[in-house]
Length: 400
Ligand code: ARG
Image (spheres, rainbow, N blue to C red):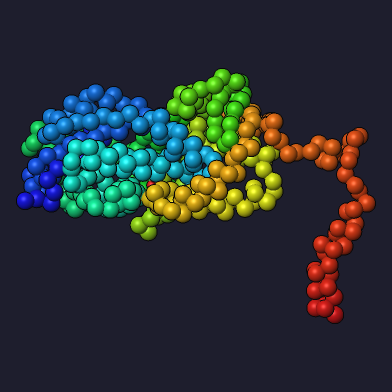
């Protein structure tokens, strides 16, 4: 009797997850491995992947389209929260993990599996997100992570797979570790491990090098309803199409790259490169629309919430009561965040150049320096007297 009887494995079609199939069966005595490939918009053909899982020994090969849910429930929640980990990373990979965890647990229940598995190694964040997500959704299910334990090098893994008919990668395998979905690409390892090495041009696929961008600026009007994007240039679009179109448009102008040193959950600092053109523009535009529609109090208080929210996502705590409580707060603030933001795309920049909303609380008659000014100028002096009083008293008492 092995560690489990029947396992649902998160399957990507790559060498590691393919090798997991015979490994689970041969080394860990699992009788049946069901492969589950989640389509989250990685832009790959999933037909061959389905086939590959069966050839590698899976008893069943599931391909589940999660794009709509990913955009609507995960990406849009992060946009409402303006979620940026360490103020920069829009969590494009991190957001996918709790959804895949949910798909695994649902499939396990449906097929009567007593365990789920993934191909993450011991050094990354993704293992934390899978494991914690899975245990939150079903505390009784076992989580198996063979690649965390098998201790094989890349070459050994390939050799092991070949014994079970898993072909070695045709191309000389890339030195990078890459994750891709609808929201972006994460690229790490290989030459990028030297923080001083400039990212080679060939690693980017969603964003153009500035030298290759159009010589004319392009404008896009992004429409939001209650904090979520609903249209581009006045055309209503479903969430997946909107993100795809915006990725294309923004990437063409060379905006959306991030190069950062990042603090992982397991305590390691790592060099990460991201491309997330649409998501970054959506967060900037959304934050801008909030500045037109939310009071100063709410805007400023929400900044702290946003940071906590980003950390929860990064650290694998999507299915956590604090996250749910923050969702309630954030959703309440988004009631009036409806309107349009105009973004100018040009030579590696995406600049908000205009915004409007039926819920604007900007009062031009108070702000204006021109005619029609409604601000009561006499009140300023008295206000400042009282506002500054504690500072004046302190100064008098301490400066002598
Ligand atoms: N550092 C990023 C994160 O934790 C990206 C992880 C990329 N994952 C991968 N398997 N290459 O979200």
